[in-house]
Length: 191
Image 1 (cartoon, rainbow, N blue to C red):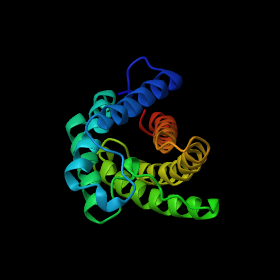
Image 2 (image 1 turned 90 degrees about the vertical axis):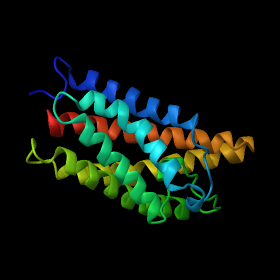
Image 3 (image 1 turned 120 degrees about the horizontal axis):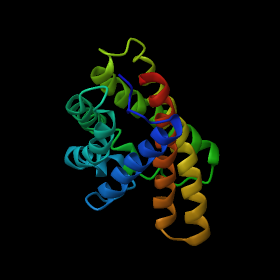
Image 4 (image 1 turned 180 degrees about the horizontal axis):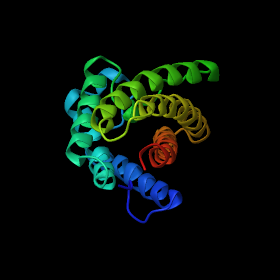
């Protein structure tokens, strides 16, 4: 069965981007963006993960169980928060004068968090798709790329404007990049 009936790769990817970024934006109504991982608790991570997983689950419901996708994603965000990484999509990477430090810490936290999210989501998608294990790598790589890029953009915008909104814009860019990278790969892996 196709991932989304009658959808091209571009249509699916755009829908995935809107769902993922829309879920992130909705979560901003309920969760405060913070500067330290320990400032995000399990409850905030649960709310944020749920806001993103719900629209994604609706998109994937033609191929996999939306309930499994939502629960696995929710559990991943809870686990990431519980082990001390925090909810990586709602944390501003600490300001540093060295871009190399921002890139390295963002890539490490992104890869670890993305691996956790990808592994949990793999549990929901592994049965109907034999190559679903690749999703773990896609998620890890997507977050490892997106967090440093979003952090650099956010740091530059914060430096230029002296406003915290610059860093929030960096997080939005992070989510946009994650949505694009995972959307393209979700279509290719699970159609």
